[in-house]
Image 1 (cartoon, helix red, strand yellow):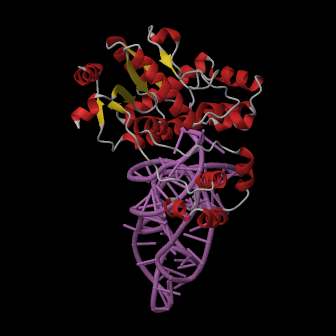
Image 2 (cartoon, helix red, strand yellow):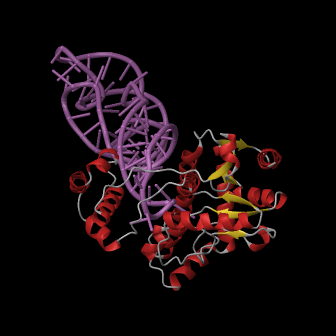
Length: 300
RNA sequence: GCCGCGGUAGCUCAGUGGUAGAGCGUCUCUCUGAAAAAGAGAAAGUCGUCAGUUCAAUUCUGACCCGCGGCA
């Protein structure tokens, strides 16, 4: 096992819920161990979405290079497969400079795709087909899938419309069954998770939200709208963008917006944890010192 | 003090003479190009208290307690 691992690129992966202080930990570690950061965040990839996503500022970067921020237009949908490819490239690039890649972010699915090298069917989304299938019921879609791809039908969730549509999309385009997931572990990762109680996290979330408001989060959403994004699209992004957009359309009051933001962000943080809490590969740390020590042992 | 309305799951409320439901929340879980997305499952109530009618009461009756509104 060890000899096998020796040839693989070492990466340090930092996970944790929103507001737990991942970015700061990543920067400190990267600075100490000559690293660069690869973000794993499905919203921070978009340009113009800064305050609402909690994107790190130039100053906070402390000179450490960051990859996969501001690489997509919010007008188009960025996908997990694109992420996988671009993150892979970024890691190679960092590696060639003899630096250590530090993957840091809150999107569990992206991290999983990257570290487990999941091979996802190479069929790009067909939005008109999806729209068409959207009109059918889950039952109908399941029946269709069962006929076209019984293998995939066996392990899919019958009530999950979105996934049923995707599976049908794949079989329609390729004519072949949705393949069983293959995993390839290209990297040798060290997983570091930030341990924090839900109560403490909730306090941080509330404090941070008030700060974001002060920093002009509402104006940011207005700007995005003025740049041509539809309200529907803004709501699709979720959390800050969703609730501020509803507020700006006068669908809800300011109080309702704040209340929904608190509850939704807390909910989101719990959902994030469900990706990691039972993962035995993760080293849960409580302090920077601990993280530094584990990283040092791992790298040298 | 009188009149009216209400007291059912952590919260907001349905409901029925045969010991109860929903939404939200909580907890588990899934995750095959939207993942801040999409979906699944579970736990949870002495139905305000006491008494009466009844084979049977959360449901009907009475008293009491608590909350809200109105009149004094």
